[in-house]
Length: 294
Ligand code: R5P
Image (tube, helix red, strand yellow):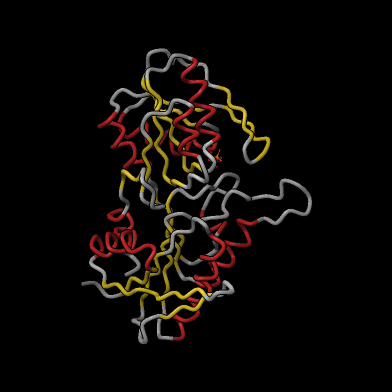
């Protein structure tokens, strides 16, 4: 067993156990009570070691950010000297500029909030677009970015050898090229214009598609509109199969049905967010990232 303690919430018990086993870490649960009026009470172990790791993936982030605020301050008051946040999905990274005057730049604000609470932050495929490093968004002493793309690429190589990997937009090029290079897949990206939460236009790249198995690769699927639009166009262009591989399975509302309706076959995701599509497990990768910290 290593020095340090992994704290987790009971709604992330499975992911926490996988990480604890991969990293040889002792674990403890943060007991969470939600009062009838929506307020939250947390209870941590009475005494904590110097080094504490808190696992909290930040899908459905609004309440979880309050969890982090309460847990981090309490952990310090109970003896933790060094606090690491493992947030496999890091929310609020997409709003990195004010697209319209007066808009909150959520990435910067949430990043500062996390940096004030933690000494280190580890995450997977954060949506960094106009910002290059995680540290610019989350200015902590140690900011570590991991990727789900290599393991998703391994899965695709096994299930769809010879597939064309396609990113739905220019931002996805970073993940698509990383996955493609690992197994020598052909790859390309589409052009996307977003008009609203549910409205996107996609243009396919000018590459041969007819008769090919195509896997759409992206960091995150939320409403599924982006991937569904791309899948519809690919089907119309004669792709033999269209499957989807994403790091973060947000899949809001009826996103999965939307993808099925657009002709998507398999949907694969990492376990950064727990979802029935999880096919790749990040525990070993996360545990290795904790080595230099613990
Ligand atoms: C944005 O550029 C992201 O990489 C995703 O493509 C986007 O967030 C997906 O959103 P939705 O599933 O709602 O189309």
